[in-house]
Length: 276
Image (cartoon, rainbow, N blue to C red; front, side):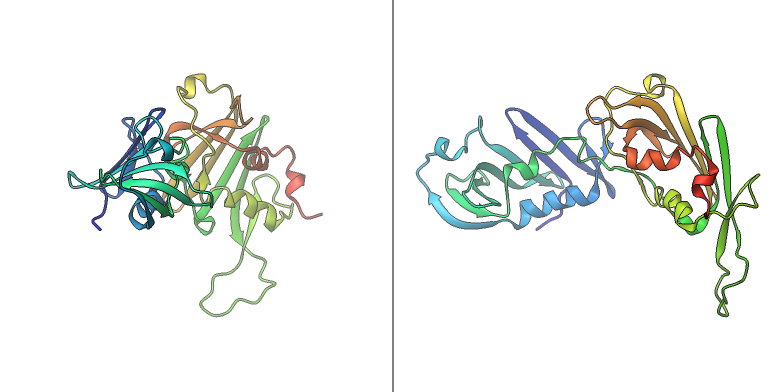
């Protein structure tokens, strides 16, 4: 089976085009970066589903939703030629089974491993949600500005109480500029750093940019290795899911973040991160 470089999915109410450019998949004419794992699973389903039984070679397409009005047509292309066409119709009585037509043949087959719902995804769901990734071991500094307060965190070599084997690096402790006498909880710092390993968007709001994303609520600056990355969280919320809008130096798109992410960054008091 040749690798695909284009996947077209169409029904009367749905249309999605996925195109491979180099190592990347792009979504629709806007060429949004696609999720390689998810798109790879679609390609795999179109390749590996099983034809279990010949149902009919005499038509009855409407009965099985295998018409242009009711079916979902999946066309897989590679190097300009059609590799496979699948018209997916009514679901079977058991999960993960459907009635299908293949490559414009007249026969109706009962198949496993393929469903309409596998291929009629929201375009937003199939976009690559990874905004940036930073290894916490590479982080040199983490600055969080929220509620009129700025906290600058940085690692230093540990106190040396724990023995270090030859060739190993000493354990690091995190400090906050201006609050060096406070002992920060390791778990609290790790929770902050793990947000960026990787940082993933929840959704991508349509027709939104920095000009209409709201007031800046929080900024985060990270220096890791030779990189400096930035995150901005706005006060505007997604209407349906109550998620806050955000932007990053690593993405041209406005995206949303869930409260489980943003609340960790909204540090109201440095003492909330210290060992009691």
